[in-house]
Length: 486
Image 1: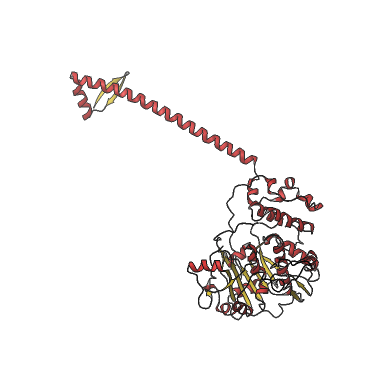
Image 2 (image 1 turned 45 degrees about the vertical axis):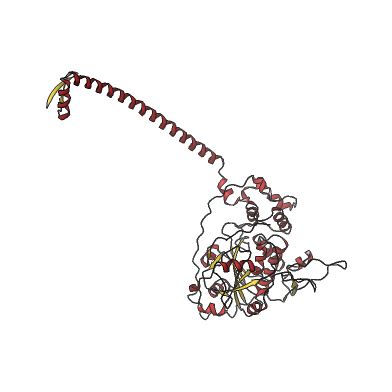
């Protein structure tokens, strides 16, 4: 180790093999030239390196400046439009009185004004759906030996008959027969009274010699269904869904022996299911489902056709005391007898349906149907005008006198006892779907409230349960295809 002087200071010099080689080269002319070239090359390399570092630093500065501007603009936009999320979640009409002026419609019943999506501008982009979860349902431990409570059927009783055939409308000609018949406005108004009467309730035939109005069933299937005392039913028309079999291990042997599981299909759907390996066995069953093929569908709209078994179970199963309706997009994961005990017997109810998972006011449901183009907007407006003119008001969650916790149902699961009031309500609800749109959630509250208003001394025991309880009974799937709205 040696010392050398640099700017007047003595510094330690560490010698090594490389130093020895360099010094040895420096003693010759050739070595001197090599050292001079090395020093020049080092200075050039350092200069280029410093320029590259300066350039990279400038690029990073520009990048971070642009990112900062984007974040600033985004934050300013969010602060200017704070209501975007609420519009996306349902376009809450309560916060939009200035734009829609629905308050004046309600007070003055101005039928020239309608709820129009155009007043909101373009629909917002789809947002992520909120997740909904099931909640606990306190079923009995076993369905074995379940029996109807002795005091259960203490409901309103009257005689109800149905219009089966319609003839001429005038001496000059015949009208075209319709499955729902040709109910006049006067007949519609009278049908809401809970009294001995004959009402329109589907399955209306024309004059002798006219073809069937639809929903034709084989006589063997009719005989089978007439023997059912308790029915679980569903339907698939137009190959719109896959077949979902009830979870057999969760259904007691008692229910398997005493409950009819009936799946209504059209011929197109049966052919599609058979091609996928779901062919009925020799008894006409696919799993627990008894397959009943419907011919001559009564409506071109498959959704409207699906309302026939959904609402008119008491017509299809004439001797049944109870029925459970299940949309085809769902798989039953609970015992039918336990469902009847929990939602009907334990609640002393004759009709049970869950509320909607998001919306509770018909005004919101109208707007959502139009925003998603679920049905023709003009038809929705016409239906809504009639309901407003007949006294339908907005749902007020703060009103303790509201007869229901929601005016919008999630109608994919319906549990009912086949009592006169339950059957009448089902007929009235079906008639609204037949007369107006097939969006049954729009007519539910109007039908129930009008029936209740016109029969103050004859109560209808409807139980509206939580949507999370519905989710505990079924597993939800996506539709195979979504029928186009008419």
